[in-house]
Length: 129
Image (cartoon, rainbow, N blue to C red; front, side):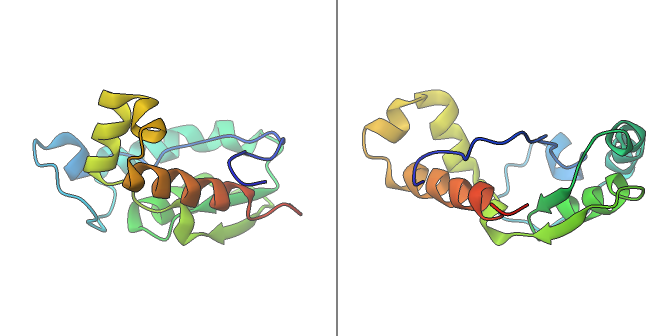
Protein backbone atom coordinates (compact mmCIF):
# COMPACT_ATOMS: atom_id res chain seq x y z
CA UNK A 1 0.00 0.00 0.00
CA UNK A 2 2.98 2.27 -0.49
CA UNK A 3 2.07 5.78 -1.57
CA UNK A 4 -1.55 5.53 -0.45
CA UNK A 5 -3.50 6.05 2.75
CA UNK A 6 -5.62 2.99 3.48
CA UNK A 7 -9.30 3.66 3.00
CA UNK A 8 -10.70 4.27 6.46
CA UNK A 9 -12.24 7.17 8.29
CA UNK A 10 -10.05 9.20 10.59
CA UNK A 11 -9.95 12.55 12.33
CA UNK A 12 -6.79 14.62 12.20
CA UNK A 13 -6.11 16.95 15.11
CA UNK A 14 -2.98 19.03 15.36
CA UNK A 15 -1.43 19.63 18.75
CA UNK A 16 -2.37 22.77 20.68
CA UNK A 17 -0.36 25.97 20.49
CA UNK A 18 3.23 26.21 21.73
CA UNK A 19 5.39 29.26 22.33
CA UNK A 20 7.33 28.39 19.16
CA UNK A 21 4.11 28.50 17.11
CA UNK A 22 3.56 32.15 18.02
CA UNK A 23 7.17 33.31 17.94
CA UNK A 24 9.01 34.54 14.90
CA UNK A 25 11.66 31.90 15.54
CA UNK A 26 11.60 29.02 13.09
CA UNK A 27 13.35 26.37 15.14
CA UNK A 28 13.10 22.78 13.96
CA UNK A 29 12.91 19.65 16.03
CA UNK A 30 12.40 21.24 19.42
CA UNK A 31 10.46 19.04 21.83
CA UNK A 32 8.41 21.70 23.59
CA UNK A 33 5.27 21.60 25.72
CA UNK A 34 1.98 23.29 25.04
CA UNK A 35 1.63 26.83 26.31
CA UNK A 36 -1.43 28.01 28.29
CA UNK A 37 -3.37 28.68 25.07
CA UNK A 38 -2.49 25.20 23.78
CA UNK A 39 -3.78 23.54 26.96
CA UNK A 40 -6.95 25.61 26.69
CA UNK A 41 -7.41 24.62 23.03
CA UNK A 42 -7.11 20.93 23.86
CA UNK A 43 -9.55 21.24 26.78
CA UNK A 44 -12.06 23.08 24.57
CA UNK A 45 -12.05 20.39 21.88
CA UNK A 46 -12.15 17.45 24.33
CA UNK A 47 -15.99 17.42 24.68
CA UNK A 48 -16.32 17.27 20.88
CA UNK A 49 -13.82 14.41 20.66
CA UNK A 50 -15.56 12.57 23.51
CA UNK A 51 -18.70 12.34 21.36
CA UNK A 52 -16.97 10.81 18.34
CA UNK A 53 -16.67 7.08 17.59
CA UNK A 54 -12.90 7.06 18.09
CA UNK A 55 -11.31 3.64 18.69
CA UNK A 56 -7.62 4.49 18.34
CA UNK A 57 -5.59 7.62 18.95
CA UNK A 58 -2.15 7.92 17.38
CA UNK A 59 0.33 10.71 17.99
CA UNK A 60 4.00 11.46 17.75
CA UNK A 61 6.08 11.08 20.93
CA UNK A 62 6.75 14.84 21.04
CA UNK A 63 5.63 16.54 24.29
CA UNK A 64 3.08 18.82 22.64
CA UNK A 65 1.39 15.92 20.85
CA UNK A 66 1.38 13.69 23.94
CA UNK A 67 -0.04 16.49 26.11
CA UNK A 68 -2.78 17.15 23.56
CA UNK A 69 -3.54 13.41 23.32
CA UNK A 70 -3.79 13.06 27.11
CA UNK A 71 -6.33 15.88 27.34
CA UNK A 72 -8.52 14.99 24.36
CA UNK A 73 -8.64 11.26 25.17
CA UNK A 74 -9.66 11.68 28.82
CA UNK A 75 -13.15 10.19 28.32
CA UNK A 76 -12.50 7.90 25.35
CA UNK A 77 -12.21 4.12 25.61
CA UNK A 78 -9.58 4.29 22.88
CA UNK A 79 -6.32 2.47 22.28
CA UNK A 80 -3.46 4.96 22.47
CA UNK A 81 -0.34 4.72 20.28
CA UNK A 82 2.73 6.93 20.19
CA UNK A 83 4.27 6.66 16.74
CA UNK A 84 7.65 8.18 15.83
CA UNK A 85 6.63 8.03 12.16
CA UNK A 86 4.13 10.82 12.88
CA UNK A 87 6.87 13.08 14.25
CA UNK A 88 8.17 16.48 13.27
CA UNK A 89 7.91 18.07 9.86
CA UNK A 90 10.92 20.36 9.59
CA UNK A 91 10.56 23.97 8.50
CA UNK A 92 12.50 23.19 5.31
CA UNK A 93 10.10 20.38 4.38
CA UNK A 94 7.04 22.49 5.24
CA UNK A 95 8.38 25.44 3.25
CA UNK A 96 9.17 23.31 0.21
CA UNK A 97 5.79 21.56 0.29
CA UNK A 98 3.86 24.82 0.62
CA UNK A 99 5.97 26.98 -1.70
CA UNK A 100 6.73 24.39 -4.37
CA UNK A 101 3.50 22.40 -4.01
CA UNK A 102 3.36 19.02 -5.76
CA UNK A 103 6.55 19.80 -7.66
CA UNK A 104 8.50 19.38 -4.40
CA UNK A 105 7.55 15.72 -4.55
CA UNK A 106 7.42 15.21 -8.29
CA UNK A 107 10.76 16.87 -9.05
CA UNK A 108 12.83 14.66 -6.79
CA UNK A 109 13.03 16.64 -3.55
CA UNK A 110 14.27 13.65 -1.53
CA UNK A 111 13.64 15.23 1.90
CA UNK A 112 9.99 15.84 0.96
CA UNK A 113 9.59 12.33 -0.46
CA UNK A 114 11.12 10.82 2.65
CA UNK A 115 8.79 12.78 4.93
CA UNK A 116 5.67 11.85 2.93
CA UNK A 117 6.61 8.16 2.88
CA UNK A 118 7.30 8.19 6.64
CA UNK A 119 3.91 9.73 7.38
CA UNK A 120 2.09 7.36 5.01
CA UNK A 121 3.70 4.41 6.78
CA UNK A 122 2.59 5.85 10.12
CA UNK A 123 -0.97 6.40 8.96
CA UNK A 124 -1.17 2.85 7.68
CA UNK A 125 0.65 1.24 10.60
CA UNK A 126 -2.41 0.23 12.61
CA UNK A 127 -4.45 -1.48 9.92
CA UNK A 128 -6.17 -3.74 12.45
CA UNK A 129 -7.55 -0.78 14.45
